[in-house]
Image 1 (cartoon, helix red, strand yellow):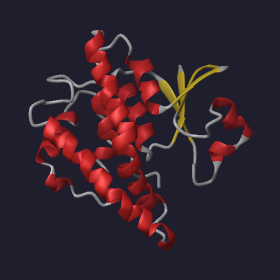
Image 2 (cartoon, rainbow, N blue to C red; image 1 turned 120 degrees about the vertical axis):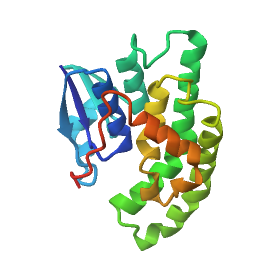
Image 3 (spheres, rainbow, N blue to C red; image 1 turned 45 degrees about the horizontal axis):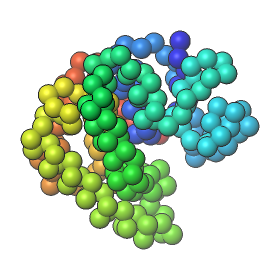
Image 4 (cartoon, rainbow, N blue to C red; image 1 turned 180 degrees about the vertical axis):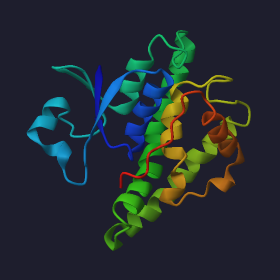
Length: 203
């Protein structure tokens, strides 16, 4: 059975919870408190020297980190990851977009606001994330004007990668009412069999 080390309030960890539920993969979840520096213990560093969550334990001495890498590993051979070379590359295209053009703005703004309580010394950083976040949302909204999901009519791990932080973007100050195609996509995503909401009670 797989073991996952993470915080369910983290969008990157929530991605793993989603794919596990969609594919009905048995697993154990171990909560890691990033605000208490639990990723910086010697024990955690042995699993991920980069001191970040999530971490997937495949075997006692084998661990995989980086959320999108974990998604690709778990989705291999399923309908959530195309076997066609070009289609698989498009999945990676959107996952790289999520990590470089989306997550650094939307997830960071949310972290500063929700996790840290928007402290005075990070207000400028918070506001500086808004332009980049809206640019990413605009790219997504335009794409979804001609596509139900990011690769067509069926969801893939590209959708999981982008859903995780997009559906809670308002917690980072982003008004999703400006993006009607994204709102439609969020609704379609949430109707996928096996969908599970992010548990926000563990605060």
